[in-house]
Length: 279
Image 1 (cartoon, rainbow, N blue to C red):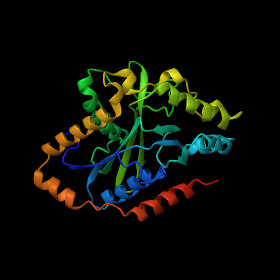
Image 2 (tube, rainbow, N blue to C red; image 1 turned 30 degrees about the horizontal axis):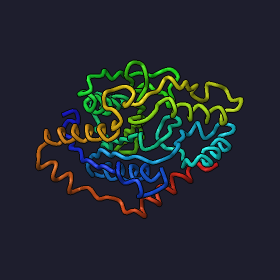
Image 3 (cartoon, rainbow, N blue to C red; image 1 turned 180 degrees about the vertical axis):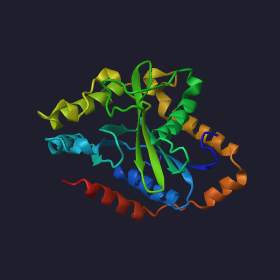
Image 4 (cartoon, rainbow, N blue to C red; image 1 turned 60 degrees about the vertical axis):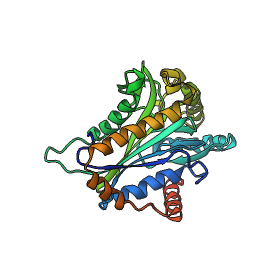
């Protein structure tokens, strides 16, 4: 099992679309669950979606006209926020699947490079897409939004970005997966944000987005118009395989240690995260 001896629980909130209109609700839930994991709680795979949001990186929020660009997004009906994990701007809608792996930090004698933690997510997504027959490549895609060394692509077009948030004794690997819809339309939205937000800023301060760089699983694979639902089921299947490979008693003990945070506690954390980056 790729998770080694760490049992992982499955939390599927991909259909909980009315739980909160605040996109930071799910990030706040990750934050609280990660704290719990660091205090001896279980590892968790968290699946979620949001109907219409635009999540910025910290550097994006500091561009010269970021506030004006954010107001334009509000006029288009997007909830906006700055995320506390790494990465740059990402648009979310029901065709985008968000996937978080919340894991304990395991100290090893060889001082394992934290970038290797990303490989757990890469492995999970590759396993989930193996049945499509497509080769999933890793490496930054020029012109893609939210670029990074762990961009996932098929035939040279990015469909997934990965970021990480580390706490003292645990960490979160967060991925967004363009499953349904048009990847280029999402990239065009990000491009328009930077066109407004960056003004005359140094191009080194923001990604130079090219719409043709990005695609969805619907466009890249044989999953068709139900790519989001099928991808979610594939992820859950892989996690259940990992669970079956674990000792049943260990899995039972892990489940008993999970305490879902109260809604008010999550909302309070979401408020705290939002206030952290208010100009």
